Amino acid sequence: MSKILDDPFGVRRQDAALESGDTSPQSKFKLYPEYKDSGVEWLGKVPIHWEMKQLKRLFNVVNGSTPKSENPDYWDGDIPWVTPDDLGALLSRELMAPQRYITEAGYQNCGTTLVPTGSLVLSTRAPIGHLAIAGVDLCTNQGCRSLVFLDKSNRNFFYYQLLAARSELESWGQGSTFKELSKTKLEYVYLINPPFEEQNTIADFLDRETAKIDALISKNEQLIELLQEKRNALISQAVTKGLDRNVPMKDSGIDWLGEIPAHWEMRRLKFISQVKMGQSPPSELCNDFGEGIPFLQGNAEFGSEYPTPRMYCSSPPKKAFKGDHLFSVRAPVGAINTADQEYGIGRGLCAITAQADKLNHRFCRYLLECIREQLISVATGSTYEAVSVDQVNNVICVLPKSLDQESIAQFLDHETAKIDSLTAKIREGIDRLKEYRTALISAAVTGKIDVRGEVA
Image 1 (cartoon, rainbow, N blue to C red):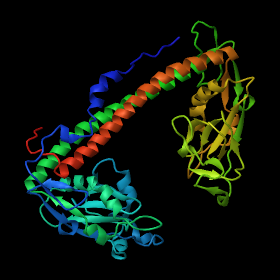
Image 2 (cartoon, rainbow, N blue to C red; image 1 turned 45 degrees about the horizontal axis):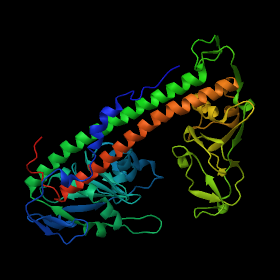
Image 3 (cartoon, rainbow, N blue to C red; image 1 turned 120 degrees about the vertical axis):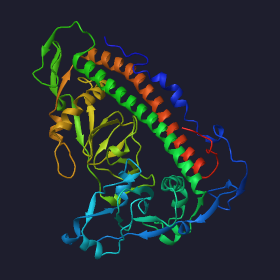
Image 4 (cartoon, rainbow, N blue to C red; image 1 turned 180 degrees about the vertical axis):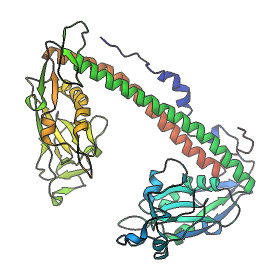
């Protein structure tokens, strides 16, 4: 019988790194000798020699625009054209290549403006606060505004300061359909403008410190991936080979299964369970204020074990009941959850009920995790990949004897719980590191800590 070590990947050796997620930078760094009240709520007290300026005194705020989408002559040119989606998808601070480009004709026939490399690009609607530094000369759509420096300033310092100011920027947004931060409102936001050399010092400090934090986060995310791989391998081994390595084996005739215990059978899923595909009700039967039966549109509402509904329906056409396993059949295929109560289910889900005389309820959950990859491999679709009810019904499954199913389920309950506990601990550490990163940036750019004496 395989056995998971208590600390298979040295997770506990990461404790010291995780504990570094102290979210109070003031406890680790010295303060400035003297402060003054900035008169700005989000800034609070600032170093006495720093000055506050409205954003319009530091930047020229440039609006964006969109060429007519129906005119092909305006699109697929060589002028970078940035949207909030580009900013939201960015993995680094510098934006080099947006998803779309416009032609010179498109540029001339709309109100957008090309801004120079090094400008800051801010999303000001849907949502407010995504941010990047222009790595090339570019223009934007109307969901973004570009900030072109008026004087000599450290672009990285103001990049960090606008990251720290995101909540403040969001609070200035207005609108009923979606919030938008107008050019006028943005221009009147107060920022801090320390001496240029101090800007350089703070930016260099934050570059060093955030790089260390990001490296720790990346390392621990890799640990989570390793733990997940170990978990998947453990489930696959137990579900398809059993727990007794000494039993006679036979060829299953299925490539992904290989050999299985000789006394086991194979069945299509439809012969050992009931598969019920979801159906979306008319929108007028749904609400988001808690009246009716909880309704699940898809895997977006899946939690770590049980769903968290966002909508309710007075009479959903298809239901899952307590104990049913929920399997997403599109966008993406293969997410798994278990119903802890009665739910309505939409087209993105199916409910799988184990036949009690053939399939152990808990074993069924692990079996679904094993056949997930087989269903993903047959998914098709242009807009999104999906599988049909026939594909789910006809996937071939191993069917151990009842006692074997119970033993395997007990074993996997125990072993996966240890892996899940380690994973949760690492995630908590990552969350603390992210909190500390945010707090460190805010403290440094608003002068709550003095980093002038900090060296690399």
